[in-house]
Image (cartoon, rainbow, N blue to C red; front, top):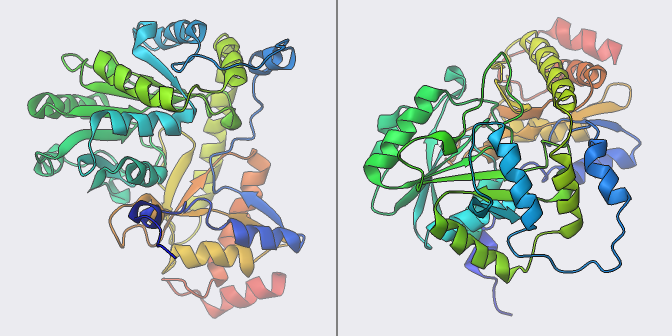
Length: 413
């Protein structure tokens, strides 16, 4: 029997989803799990998005244009204009989810063996997208001690070679919740201009910024209009993760043209979901204000509870709905599995994602986890209580727990 391809063998599994078998076994035992491991919000999808789909009268569900419905792309220009992002509909390509947008962008600008610089930790699926496109990721490590701000620009410049095609950022950031400042974006603008490379930004979470911070798109940066590629998705904006509609936006006609050819090869993005997205663009501002207030409160509650736990380091995220947390454990992989297999309180436990899968560099994130504050506040409080009690008795703690603490816990549970 012939072996699999090198690409198939090197394709990484998702650290977010790899614990699913353990969760399934826990559920078979009747255990309730608080899912804080994945960015699946419990916020309702707005009626403005869903009603056109419910009322759809379409005798034939036919192929659509490879670049997305013209009416949707025109409507998207109105949406982006609200954020001072001025585009023509020809600057936008509709994709099958933000994932496809990233893959198309990689393939449009880079050949196999080319390099893309990405600050780590980063959204873990960038690894898989890079394998699919045949490009090499060059990580630049940010630190929890610095709240995961952009590493010094000199470190980024040192990594640029004749193979470098782009720098990719996620802003607001998944998994850290960091929001890049105007000064950081300006530093990136200068290095892109100097080295004539592309700047890509995954801006899926632009609606979710806190503490009066304003998101700034790379498409508003001057002098690099032909060097910037924005990647987007409706999944989180409308709490519609299953809709699988994303976008590439760039004023570089060659980039859009190349990406469109990849789009032609997969025929077209989903038609029904595009109808929902187009109507969803007119969702009242009150919906987004309410959602933002809810996430802000969830963030505050979660970080407050985490900071009460001895040995836990929890930066305050500035955007999105995730944070990376350092735990007093020797192996977060083992700990997150143990939560599902060996620990519960009143037959309830919590599922979080080990953060080592969000780093490209081996050995990093070993005692860190990503937690998503995507559940209602009462559930977050219960989940944080479970996590706190679990840390008191976990046998792989990196900081010892007193016998009194352990005895007290075992007596209660």
